[in-house]
Length: 73
Image 1: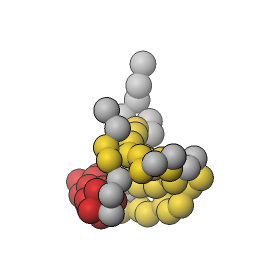
Image 2 (image 1 turned 90 degrees about the vertical axis):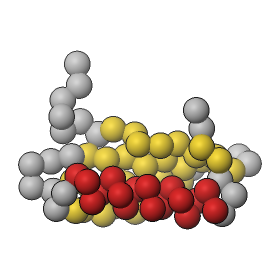
Image 3 (image 1 turned 120 degrees about the vertical axis):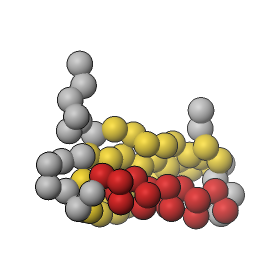
């Protein structure tokens, strides 16, 4: 059973052998986004709203897509 504050993977991508994914950790006062590249945490950002955090994750996804990454299904 999942909880509303459990971390959730928003997307997974690959480019050749490289992998990337974004995770959101929603909270009552802030939401945290993390990005992982090849299984290593690259960045963590906190936002006042889950909606802003998700928009930021989508923005990064767009950058990766433009850079040749493909979304994993």
